[in-house]
Image (cartoon, rainbow, N blue to C red; front, side, top):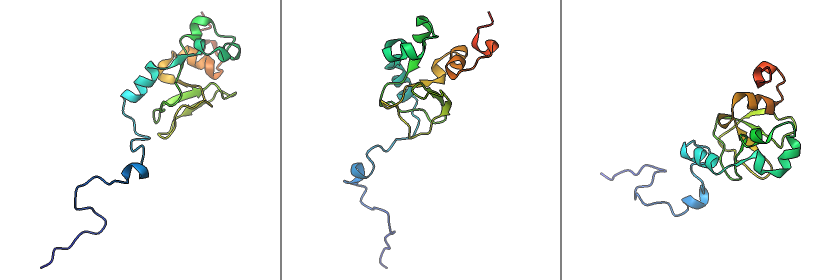
Length: 134
């Protein structure tokens, strides 16, 4: 009796020579932990980006050094919260797995900033939420 071959499944266990062309970044959108922390380690601060000094003029220099900006090309962690400082509304966004930092965005990860400073970046004016009540 002839052995039936399953349709659509390779039987030779060889790597597909076209796989890299068809899917150049197979892990895009997946969270692998170290990628995000490496991005944060390589990131800039708002103090280092001179354009932000006038844009965030109500923040002191020591506060600007606490505001982490993801470097261009780093992937955003799916489900994590960010603020894009190039967005005039400074809305909090939830990242999707296919998002990455580009020259058009200055993403600040919520996990890398203290809540009072995060709230001030978002435009929250309640003194209890921005530590201004002290």
